[in-house]
Length: 182
Image 1 (cartoon, one colour):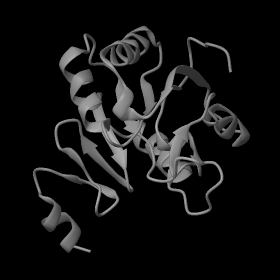
Image 2 (cartoon, helix red, strand yellow; image 1 turned 135 degrees about the vertical axis):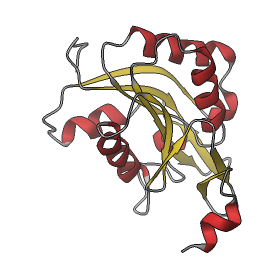
Image 3 (cartoon, one colour; image 1 turned 180 degrees about the horizontal axis):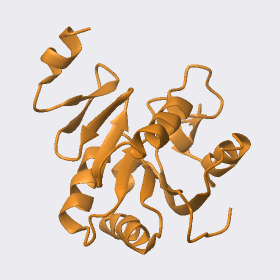
């Protein structure tokens, strides 16, 4: 979809597992050359206007300062109040804190999301759920920067990833407290 000043959602795409494929030659996932997220979102025939900006297609461990600056610039230039940043899970909390520290305007809802399993080619992927949950959550949150994973919204300063659990938790509550309450 082309840029539209009245877009209700602006997806800023950086790659990560959500936008990757399994490469058997290296026994891990690698980012797609082009994002599959725009075609997926368009297939849903949503009522909202949606805009897409592909910044890069990288594993989040390979994101550099230039990439984070490009995400920041895309957010600042966006006319949308609802920004969904698709991102790899390894450094998602770092990028959330970078944005909080460097964003000049605080009038937008910025949600970083991704998945533990690639969105394309895997039946048990959390990618589509995380995208939808992020969109649904954005319209109910005050302006700010959030990490939206595993059916939960975390503030920019509390989100952490537990690799062994395959999900995020709040550093304020602690992994044990959050995971034991199930």
